[in-house]
Amino acid sequence: MKIRNILVVTLFSMFTIACSHYEELSKNSTESKSGDDESHNPGQDCGSCHNKSGSEAALEYWWTVAGTVFKTNGTAQKSATIELWTKPGKQGTLVKRLVTDDLGNFYTDQILNFQGGVYPVLISASGELEMSSAFSGGSCNSCHNGSKEPKLTIN
Ligand code: HEC
Ligand code: HEC
Image 1 (tube, rainbow, N blue to C red):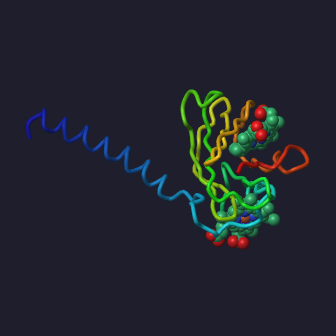
Image 2: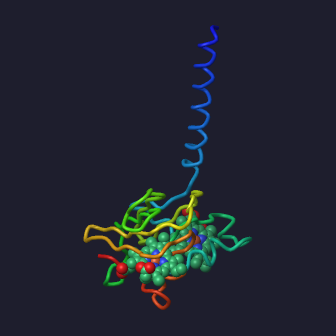
Image 3: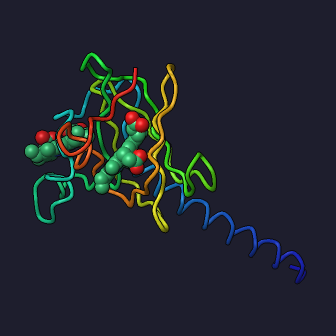
């Protein structure tokens, strides 16, 4: 093989190894999907079980982001999107986009880089709501539980 061919093959392998590793991580992550009903406990603080070292829930799935979205009438908001941006007002980089399932729940166990904190945006067919302070991972319902902060609600 000519030196140039060896170089091309090497670069190509490096590239595919890097990509397949990322794809493998993404493929293995468990995440809420539109129309799914495998989750449970809507409105509860998911992290109280799932992000508690040693608990059965945490052994199964450690959610890096999780929560529940309701409609104003209290039923599940089954078709909302949650976006996490590095800057307020949907600026900077989109770190993650999640959708709610049939219980209104959203969750992922994908390892995410929250950097200095990310700004959540809640989106539905009726509009958008933005959180003006930063979130650094974990359970949205730990605050948005209806007593500390209002439940995440959008029609
Ligand atoms: C009281 C503790 C507790 C709370 C609160 C809790 N979970 Fe769980 N969760 C568990 C346990 C334990 C399991 C694993 C065993 C099972 O499936 O029941 C689990 C499993 C799951 C699964 C996998 C189901 C499957 O078998 O495919 C999902 C998805 C899930 N939880 C989502 C959530 C979300 C989202 C929240 C918050 C809205 C939440 N959980 C709140 C304890 C909890
Ligand atoms: C540490 C507590 C805390 C956590 C965790 C938290 N929030 Fe908030 N959230 C707040 C507070 C306080 C406000 C009101 C002030 C503000 O916007 O910063 C708020 C406001 C919001 C609003 C605006 C609501 C409105 O009616 O305008 C949205 C949307 C929101 N949060 C989404 C989320 C999502 C999605 C998550 C999880 C990814 C999350 N929040 C996690 C404390 C929290």
